[in-house]
Length: 129
Image (cartoon, rainbow, N blue to C red):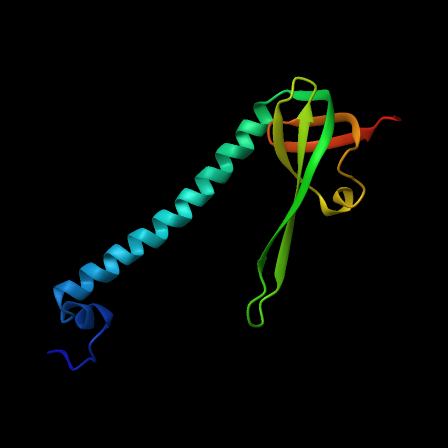
C-alpha cells in the first residue's frame, strides 16, 4: 500500500521492474508494432500500385501452375494460394495469383488472351488451337 492507504497500481509495479527487463519488453514491442506496420504499408503500396497500373490484354501461353499451402498444424486451418505462370509472345514470363475457381479451369499449354492489371489477374480467354 502507498502512503494514502491504497494498493499499488500498475505504474508503481512498473517502477520496480529492473531496467533491462523494461528495455527488453520495450524493444520487443517496437519490433512487433514495426512488423505489423511494415506488412500493412507494403500491402497498401501494392494495392495503390495495382490501381494505378493500366489494364493489359495480351496473347499468352500457360507454362506452369503451382499451389502454396500454409497453416494446418495442430487445430489451425490451412489456406491454399494458386499461381499460374504465363509466357507472352516475346518470351517474357511472369506469375500471377489466380482465384481458386479459375485455377482448376486452366491447363498448362493453354493459349489465349490474358487480361491483368499490375499483379492482379483479371481474365484468361482460351483461344481455339
